[in-house]
Image (cartoon, rainbow, N blue to C red):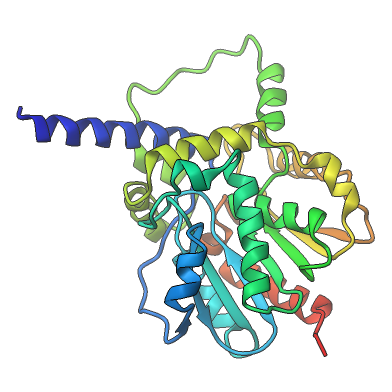
Length: 314
């Protein structure tokens, strides 16, 4: 094997290792292939100013920001874009390092990818002169939506958290403590398709999940996963002063957790959120990718939230 082949093999192996762990944690998102949006794209100067993500803009009206999860692209929001584009201006993100977007340099990464992205989103809102947009995020994007709702109520009008958690590492630690002494056979080898099937019932998404892993930067995926495992937004949730909706997928823990246990985990993790600002809705028909398994339900929940809570600027 020549040197170029060795380097290619090492790079592929590194990416597979990081992405395998991501899939095991249920953090990755799928990407769909669908026709290119007929849209206005942020100017070249604006894209250069924010190397933290790429953005596509669709429609006219009050602004909504859509953020996908780890190793995911803007395409996961296809059905949501179709449902909302006639009434809202949608800013659809793909975060740096995922789905073919250039990863952040060490200098731009800063001390935290999560904090850097939060500030970059606020900078984007300011540059684009968006009036209190509502932020909708899936998984990692859901975490960012919760963080912005808790820390920047003057800049955003509300948030929808789609199957994200404020303290993922805490949940894993609690589950590990409960299962101490329980024997679970480790898989003989990593099977990305098996992992994909664990995150979506919709078979048409499985290969897309697997394919999208390889379009993402393995180092970024691994480091961001590490940050998420250490992050804990729960104390900050007490600061919520804008409406927030958490959408949970009750099959996400199958077959290791019952639907009642999954719902209880969500309610416990978000217990600090004031009831007057935070609400839940759960679907019993979906795994992690609600947009794959229950798109009509998801879009109905998002549409209702926007209609009820949007703050329109003068």
